[in-house]
Length: 447
Length: 59
Image 1 (cartoon, chains in turn yellow, red):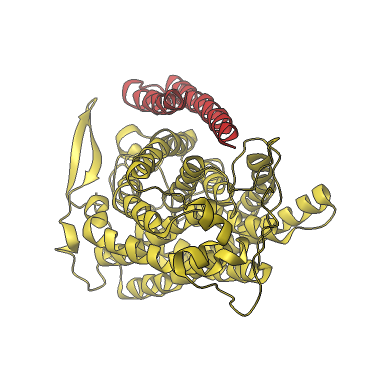
Image 2: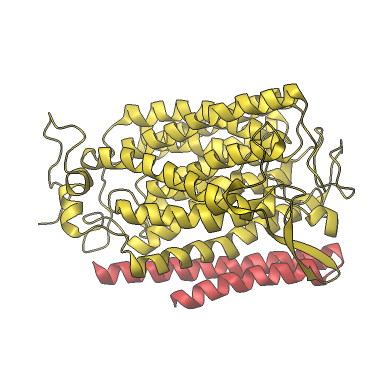
């Protein structure tokens, strides 16, 4: 199986799409920062820069070597009578990749940004209590091990992508824009971090009831959503063109689907919170918007616009209730809503592709290994999507939890109680984000 | 309990993999994949309960 070479206009289109992806990263950084308290704002923003640096560096050193590209060298295991492609075998340090617009070089560029985006997702759930050094070490594990491994299975011609070729399950596991590879992997890592670190001090009373700790800047959060939308248009378009063989002219469908899904999700969250609380909630609406984006990614090129709107509506309905139940019933403190937005939104996106798929666009991973037009692929596609979801929950979650649990033994992830009380800006950076204002009090701490 | 939860998660995934490799027919394969996901669901319930108890005892 080989990835088709892109035409010159195709290369230009993919490059333009990739250039938009940093806006998704910037948007996520604003969302994470705005949903936290002002005493941690500078720390969260600066951590974002560090996380991007560590993620890109680790991906350069070994991440791409283990992710690889479709048709590249790989380690195979014989299971049953089929070859299972488990791990890429590219040289480390990007050796052998010609940076000239080849599919491999475009993959490297896009993935460097994608892995940074995935690494930022746990920052939302572990915000306000995660040490900077530990955050960088955890990012290295995500960008060097967890992400490349799963991305190879989905985007590098691995066994999940080949479920169609080897076992006749539709087109194999399809995830055009990264609902699974970026969003769910990041979201499940966010869940692991929330479990390992526990809730913020003062979040729960001694009776176990959660207290409200509102974010400090709703405008950051909502403007971040707008930036993320533009970034997602690039992310979904580039992913669909590079990893699913989408022709550039079908980017219109990707843009329409992405926008419909996000808009429908936000409107549904507005209505759900209006009914639930009496007034629409800005931060939950922002979460609903991003959940719509996360859910749109998998099927952005392969579902009709009506289905994309329905995917968004369901994401927007589920997410506020998931956030509430995680906090109230399950005792999980997730200040940025990362687990509900990215893990649940991403998982819903990949399952929704199995429900609503139409493959009018050429797709890869057909039995003869070529990109071609196909019609409905029946229940096989749904089963392939289920197997992908089961792999995320049954393999990626234990792996990322185990790695971070081990890391926690050697590099404690949680900041000292004094750091939490003081705020990470002062404790770790020595200066507040808003030095001209009195920005922190102890109102959320039990006396 | 926590280790049991994670072992159960991996077991559910292995059940899904076994269904893909060993079962040729669509119906039985689908049933076993769903069974594997059911096991993963039980494991998640166990893990959520376990972590809730752990954090309560730390408070």
